Length: 404
Image (tube, rainbow, N blue to C red; front, side):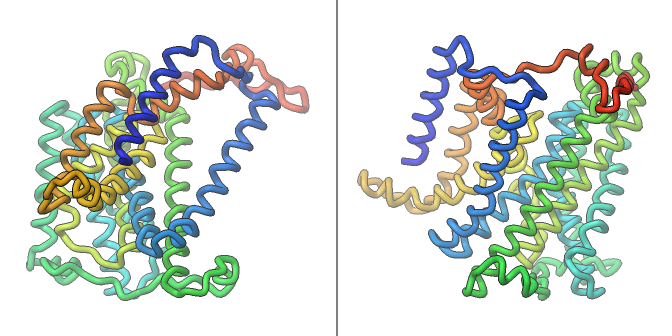
């Protein structure tokens, strides 16, 4: 039923986009109307994000809040994949290992050294960054399918390395049995008074949601600023025309390697958020098929090369996966006998990928942007006007430097 509703909405959106030739509203970038539009849009989004855990708690308790938390930290991992695949133009499929590195580093630092979650995140990101830089060095000489095979081999090898008995690795990772994190994330008294939830389990789930949502928003904000900065424009230039970027003075080896490192650091951050939510890490959670492939699926469904695509794709993956567990009730009404309904999950995702490929090749985020342009068109400020704009004191601002 839900899939049918999605198909109807998709078809209605395509029909609307095809019939509209002129947008309903035009706003000039930087105008008061445009600023009001941004404030209202982000205000509504913020209110929805704050109310969401309470709505989910009322519907199904802390379980669905935990599913939402999973979607958020997977969105951070997909953001890391997108930074390499979507913005750099490289094919890297090994981010499940980076998530595992962050998760195991968090578990080890908490259980073996008595650290807090907040203290482990920078270290987990640092570990991911170092491994990403080391993996990015071969990317300077190989590309395409060869680079994809290299990252797949690394992701496939990581779970085996996490189970090694040598050098004390299994003691820190828990080996084949995994490792439970005994530290609980308990909200401070002043936070408990703000949350206004009496049930302890629901209160902790909502508190974890807000913590994970904060770090997710921080990751997206920093990545957005990076992409719009001078280094970000250089990375996009490498994707669009590597030769042209090199001629323009872009340092290809440095930017490729650093991009790999930052992408892996986002994976390490996602690993810490994973540990926060589940309080348990095991090598089987970070194997290639159960994690790396869903990250790629989420990226394609959400939209390659779009910031919103990471969040949309993660939510699509998590909640479609949950929806398929209840499809047996719907199919049972049609007299069909389904022994193991979870086996339908790959088929559902396959159908969604086919629909996205044919009707929304830019992903859900790209399709949503197309619909938005049919309703509200933002007229960009001319580059010459931006370069000659003056401050409130009347002093002419500096013209941005070219990429290099």
